[in-house]
Structure formats: structure tokens, C-alpha cells
Image 1 (cartoon, rainbow, N blue to C red):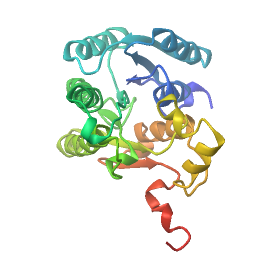
Image 2: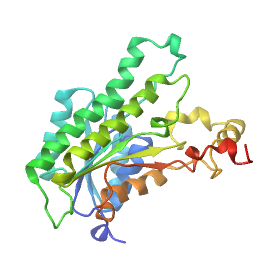
Image 3: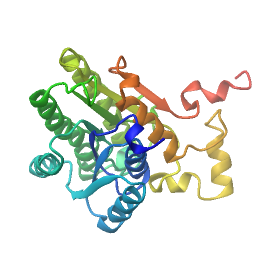
Image 4: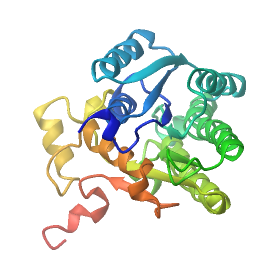
Length: 270
């Protein structure tokens, strides 16, 4: 399939935290689907440039944009630049996130605040700017049935408690309710808001969980599909959620987790 036949052809997508991992995978998947992509990063300019190179090699269009998503002014500037360059924004992928892990009794206020600032406040600030642009522009039928689409990056840990990661799990639980509340409020305006909840995906953020054969074997005990997920698995889901194929899908979390939420401890009858 050529880019001109892609599910997202002609649309503009901002992908936050797109210099590596899942964000980078979504950026290339969107480029293959015909979208023009804004590759957001906060510190890794070289990595962001490599992702842009991949996009260009695929015949896509895009640019890199530095912004800390927890900073209101930087988020507004990112959207201004995207609109100046491409005319509008059709899709936001709220992907930027981080972990600062610690036993709860040792968790510092700084570690708590930083994770919530990026993982939750960052999604609020970016989603607010996206909704403002979607409302301003409205539906353009030749681009999409929707006025705009937001894909929030959540986690299986919006549902599964995670000892030693209270700040991260709390942020993802917050993402779930933020997503559902926005989806409910703006569905009448033809704005669709959904989440993806990845399980174990082969990315730098969880390298310790799969870097050795023993660690990998232990990880697979939690995954009925008996393989770790790849960024391509999430990228394909993100393309579908933002496409008109998912036009009647609003306010859900699509778990891409190999069955991690299926209580794998019971797969041998408990």
C-alpha cells in the first residue's frame, strides 16, 4: 500500500515522546499510513533526528520539535509550530512518559511530582491544545469523519496495581479517567479520545525485564501469549484507533498486552 492509500493519508499527527521506544514506532507507523508527523522530544535530539530520517526514508513528511510536555508554554509553542507548518493538527498521540521507581516508603515528593507532571499533567496540557484546534477547525470530510482524534498512552497498570511503582500506576489510572472524561465531553463534537494500554513491550524503559534469558523467562510467566510485545504491535493499534475504521470507538482502553490482564496465574487451573 502506498502512503496515498494509507488510513491516515493527508492528516497531521503530533506524537509526544517520539524519539525512542513506542513513540518512535508510532511515528514510523503513522508515516507509513500517510500522515505527516511531528516528532516531539524533550532531550534526545539525535535520537529524534534518527526517527525523522526513518520517516523520510519511508517517503513521509515531518519535523522534530523539542518540548517538555509538562510545561504549558512549550506545549502551546509545539502546537503553534505544527499548525504554522502543516495548517492544522488532526491527531494527537499522548505518548510521553517516564518512570521513577522506588519502594513507597522511600518515594520522594520530587519523584512523585515529576512522574505525575509528565505522565498525567503532560497529557492534560497536550490534549487541551488538541481539542482547541479540533473545535476551531471542525470536521473536514475529505480528511476524516472525526474533527480530531486523541490516542492516550496508558498501561496495563491503569488496572493492575504495581508495587514499587505507585507514582507510575497512579499516573496511568489518572490517564484512564482523563481520557474517558474528555471522550464523554467531546463525543458530540465528533472528537474521539481513546487509550492504548501496552503490557510488556521491548523498549528501553523496561530493558531490565528482558535483558537476560532468565529475566525474559520470568517475564513470560506474566504473558499468556508467551512473547514480549514489539513497538510494531502498538504502532498498528495506534494507526487503527486514529483511522476512520475506528470511527465508532470512543472512550476505551485498547490493551496491547499479550493477555497480561487475563490473570495468567490461573492458566494451569490456579
